[in-house]
Image (cartoon, rainbow over the protein chains, first blue to last red):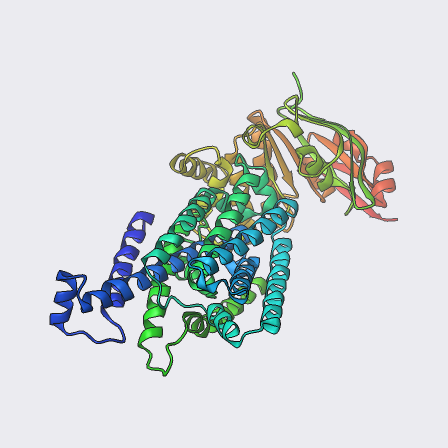
Length: 328
Length: 250
């Protein structure tokens, strides 16, 4: 299947899922109310659809697309099917940024938590970019990522530990679990800018990711400016992950799973997988958020909890399959 | 005519160990140069330092231009490199892997060239098969097609026949000889001394980071060199099929 045809097909499926996610929700509406919502966006049913559900679905799609694209980029860069934006440690440090803002009482200032999360991601991204420029082996980058992730997690635990207010602690916990509840169009607009920049960088690095298939040395001897493309990939993935965490908190496994949903359709090509991974990530998160809303529980499920519940077994399955190919 | 590749006094260290010690070498168009030596002698280090992949003192020039000053597209135009590591991270179809050699071309042109090179190495029928689904010999041919797709005047292959059966080894070296006959300079590292003597115009013997012999096969692999470097008691014997090594451990 050609890349254009595959993407068009996925866009169609995503549009269908998006419509479903806007139409369905906790508040049941009659056909007459749907008609009123479409005709009069300012009416109460219109408020439910366009002010509560639609921006939430848009943020879920944007965050999913960002994580899916970042995941595909990291898998190509690290030549590892188990790589994920979290592997770099950017998610953890971004979460730390949000935790610091909440603990410091900045939650009342609009956009402060988001900005703090984005700053955390950029700082982590800068650290990773510096490390990637110094150490070319993917294993080294993964190990530094694991260390950065553990350090970010430890500092977040310290913020928990020292937090004077149980309210702040609960808020941090809610953020770290990931959610798109109560997101509005302003949140979506804030997310778009860094995500677009990150996406442009990752897509620009595509040819370099493909060249890395045969290893570092074969890539370095090619005609491509690999050092620059590698920085594009790391910086792009960091921006995408940071913007996703800023918009919705820490959501795991989407970056890992999305590329694997489309890998066979693009014949494993690390360049052609980028767009489909973004679309698959958007689809996954829109559906996961719909599930979070529709599964009848006393308190609404957090999006990060839903993705982790499905993602962890998927990760184990992928690790098992990968270990079989490593043995052979 | 200036050399395609000239190395003068290359010295490289990894940690506190000197892996290359004042190595000099020159490769011209149309010749096949075999680099041989015991494990850990510095064969790969010589290639890597000469291509700018390993930091080294001394001078390395490609077509009379300092390697360190070449930008990636310029270097790729002058040399194609087949690393020792033949692993592929992803199960890309062979035509896409071969097209990686033509990173200067647009996708369509690179694909057409990849098919041409796969045909040249006798692997056209593998074009749409994933490289991870292939035998070692099949994958080696696809990687050779990638090397040829670089269209570079100098082809450097690090152990291109490691792990291959005798037929595939001879085929690989015949294909590289054919490139030399077309005018390319070819450098290969090899472990099989008989195969090296049969397939190469010149043999460079590396031992403990130094080049200890650089001459025609019979001279470079003289009984004295075999004894001093490889700890073998024997000699190359000329046969109808080419030279063979008859030797035993000292």
